[in-house]
Length: 145
Image 1: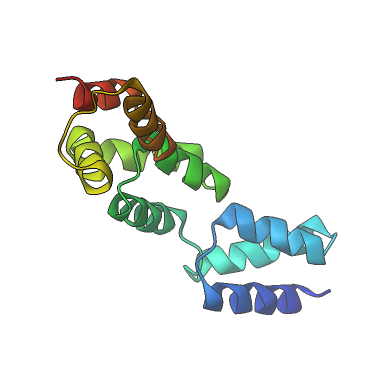
Image 2 (image 1 turned 90 degrees about the horizontal axis):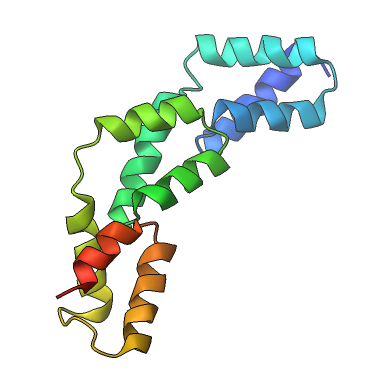
């Protein structure tokens, strides 16, 4: 496969949705075993600004915050997309998010304002908030009277 064909294939993929540079590199390597051709196509994509991991990190963070996901879940989702861990940490540090308020809104939306009295109900709420990526310290602060 030539560099132009590989580049065209990457552009076709990027036309459908945003990909992280790691994802695109992995997909291109599946179609072409020549690492030099893959790197040439990647360089061309980067020079045309078709790939921008920092923009994708910000977009994914906004999407996850809209879903009321906590910091752990956001990090997991971004790592799953093969994004640079340094870019992830940097973007999360720049955020001005009240994680307590975010978790509290999620708990209220799902379970209401009442603090659970029953241990089973409390455990259920803890599991739910942990699954959504909130830290145990925030969860206990919300669920403790």
